[in-house]
Image (cartoon, rainbow, N blue to C red; front, top):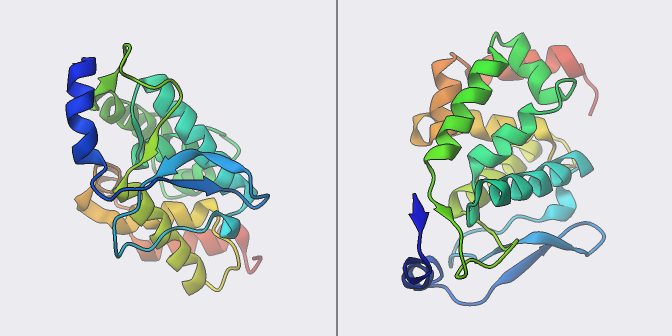
Length: 197
């Protein structure tokens, strides 16, 4: 679906009812590239607590959203990016859990194709926002890291947060359909990383 500039202008007030924009910064206090407009009462994520791999995944998710012509970075952008390095931890975990990566990747791509695209003179080039859902997912990932007594939020904590979403979101629903439970995931994670933190 293509939104014309007039549609974009009508959507913006609904998208940003909370006011000011927060520029997310990484550990080095450099702008992260995504902007997020927090809802009152919603805990904000602290990217200084994210590993370099997690931060790189967020930047790649932003790039993915731009390539798809999306105004917002959402969970499916991030999940797709997490599956891309075939030697990475997330693909190894998913394979060990019996998930056919190509099938999951294809389904996530189909879900992203369904999201509205924005192009034309009304769209600001390279400017994307983080959805409330993705912010909440990253906050859950931070909580998972604390629960597992890890100092930093890593990709496995993000994947665990996706699993915890369950049927409430497209990504959570897909992972649930492959029969992945929290307990199975944690068991597999311990097998792969051992007691290493």
